[in-house]
Image 1 (cartoon, rainbow, N blue to C red):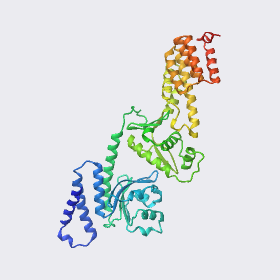
Image 2 (tube, one colour):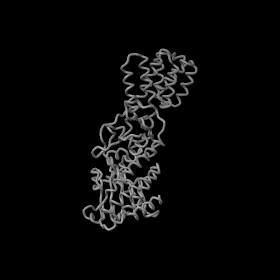
Image 3 (cartoon, rainbow, N blue to C red):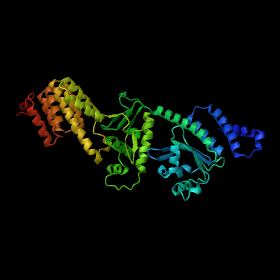
Image 4 (cartoon, rainbow, N blue to C red):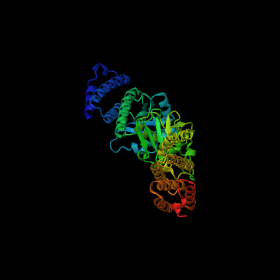
Length: 464
């Protein structure tokens, strides 16, 4: 990179003599801009590394405008949060710009920047003190960052951030070159994101083409698309996982930050600070885009709240469970009924969103599907028993018992299957084993079902 700037200096020394007589800043700006673009383009042809391209471009633009810091600031228009993505420190290793930026995530206090983003127009502040009275919050930020002047250009196409130069000393009134530099950075960062995503993308089950997103809630939260999978382990942030699960499980409308906070933090006072919620959604959205390759957001802002994106084609394992249960109820064919019930039972891996099992807002949903699963398992084993497929009854009963140990109805099916497969003696031993983990109420359920089953000799089983 050092060779690049030596090459640029040689071009500057070769400025035609007939142009040196002009003091017009704009003329010199145009000539030098053309030279910089030519040298930068030829130099970038020598590398395919997006990080090297962005580093070189940032150093070039900082040198061209005579600034002491240049960087790319990403602004999320949905959550109104902003953060530095990459930067060049003209101030050297001891530069404290990033430390000063820490915690300054709220872009809503920067209406000038949000408007610039929407209109795709540059920001030019030749003297930040001029807005001390008119925009005190914005000025306080510049003062904290030791920014006496600022020029910035929104990314194009499809603005997502800004290329920012702090304290430029040259060509402050000519920000046009920033658009070119910003475009180079935009493409380099897009390429880098693609490479990172390709490195971390993992094998996944084929997606049904009728759905953009498939979400699993039973036991662990898992989000799958045709491009990749996002799991709780990958997110690795319990508060973010609980927030996302809350919004995904309540898709019917948008939820305000206050409502979200009070459900996720019962008993705690909401102080009106929404940065934590917005920050979690922002970080999740970035991770979701990288892992799945989806440009459309899964969580969107609507009014003053957040919700699951209603524009996406989304299906969940809970919806699929209900669909198979409904199909089983509607068919009169025993084999078709068994097939639908199997599909429903196989979907249930454990409680809905087990990570949030202590959350009060989740209790009704968890209980609802526990009851539905036991109902589905009971119906399936009843149909299998009619077919005298006791091995399958044993298989599904054992799986259900792992999920709900001590449940009387499930224990009955274990004993019933054992009786038909191994005889009364083994069934009695199974009953005594299971009895240790059952309440008297559950024991009564077992005995009542055994008495009603005409295929079992109750007196032989219990010596009565």
